[in-house]
Length: 496
Image 1 (cartoon, helix red, strand yellow):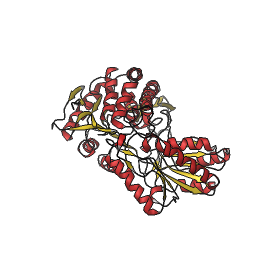
Image 2 (cartoon, helix red, strand yellow; image 1 turned 180 degrees about the vertical axis):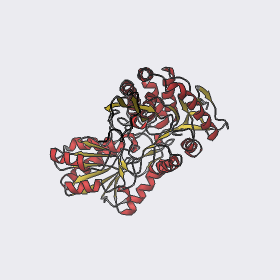
Image 3 (cartoon, rainbow, N blue to C red; image 1 turned 45 degrees about the vertical axis):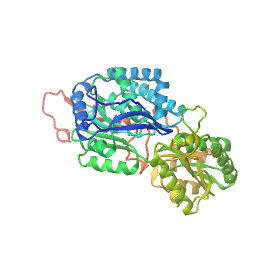
Image 4 (cartoon, rainbow, N blue to C red; image 1 turned 60 degrees about the vertical axis):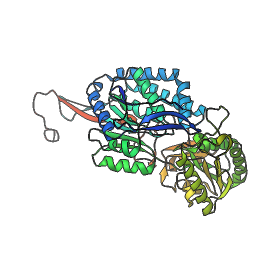
């Protein structure tokens, strides 16, 4: 079967990897469907891309921020026009259902318009000097060349979270998208170019982490790294970047809890739990992988949740009737199956699912049944480690305080949710849950682009996407203007 061969984008030109190697991008719902062949890049390709970005930085940093914003705004309008085609491309290469990939593209649209507005809001501060006839202020400066490594589960939204704020701040970029979903990032960057982005301002190097990602992280001319992926890889990225004193933004894993109290609106909580657990086939860092149930409602909730999970339609995401798409690759299927066995060995009770789907309409793809475990305790591995698949644990508790303790007992701290009608407990949870995001009467997924996104503990290192991204992609410069026409020595000449 013939397929399209794509190329790296370096300095505004499309070119193959210098070594001539390629890899195939396959549809996870149908292995026989080849989305395209992409370059398998190595260090020399990264070197070319970084050199192009460094050259472009000299002029891009001087473009007024409102003019940079015009390009981003234009890109947002083009994304609106191309939304359906880009969504279909994304479902074909990533697998999640078409309604979700439309949402993924919409997130990039939202990000474009939000960040375009920041072109006139890159504020610094002015402040009185301690000396007479001296003016003091601070301004934001671009960092320089920024390296970006992005995941496969949100292959347009997450690159937009990184690229757009970096660009509005005056940086140039080299991005290495996940090898499982390269086309969506190409579509995004091609849209930026069509909107008027100058050559070399954004460069794409396709390939695998060890061969293309690692040299990007360690490159001497890359001034900062923004990474989204697993905690294990993020730790390696952070260590490697530290050797050359690069600031690093790490957004990594999660083991997110939805707490349901006895007084909750159960129908609402069930809706949220099904969406949070099985949306994106559980392949979100914010996925609801733990549902904490107060004893009074546990039995009723469990029965209904399991029934709803069993009824979910698993299939090709391009079919509008499909509710749960495939997992991204065979490795993720193996991980889900491995954790099913771990949970059973620990004594958890398999309530539904637990198997890969390999026959009939599922024969050519990476499909796994929506899976629910009951009888889970907070100490079990299934309740502590990230699966990144359609596998959810039900944990029962007695008191609200116990629920908070269970929710906080893990090594991650990304997203949390509480369902209750008690405003006092809602505000207590907002204060006490150890996470970067807390939802009240809403599931653990559903972040909006203008709020800070990220977490604590093994989830992240303190930086944020959304609100806060500009802080990472800029550096502060203090500026002093002395118009006294004489030497004035701070902390010395103004001493009494």
